Image 1 (cartoon, rainbow, N blue to C red):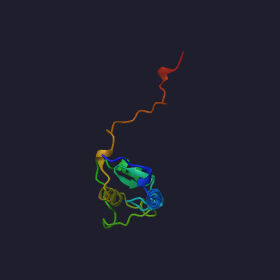
Image 2 (tube, one colour):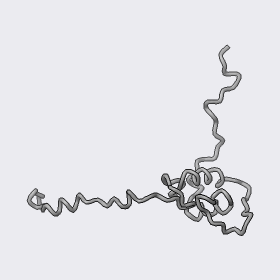
Image 3 (cartoon, rainbow, N blue to C red):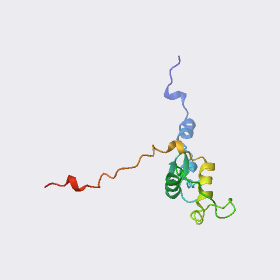
Image 4 (cartoon, helix red, strand yellow):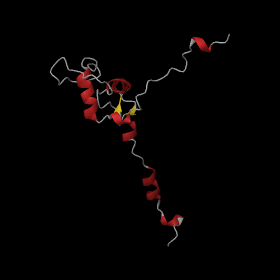
Length: 120
């Protein structure tokens, strides 16, 4: 095996290695469901907080949500509240998955105190 020495690297090589493409880092992150500013990956898809919370609440619903319009509503940050059915459909089409949800056990509020726990 040959040894690498400082002489084996040119100044151009060192400069080329320092160049970093920041376009992907600096690019605005857009929600795949409504087009609003996304905060990160939620349930497998880049989404905003609003769509994350909407999916968490509605992906596990037992009853079917029906579109009151023509079942092809445009979902934007301004219109996302108008049709739950089309918004949920768009969540699934964007790739959001129920499998990312925790076990849907009822959450216990740790701050809630019962009358029996008070000191006498």
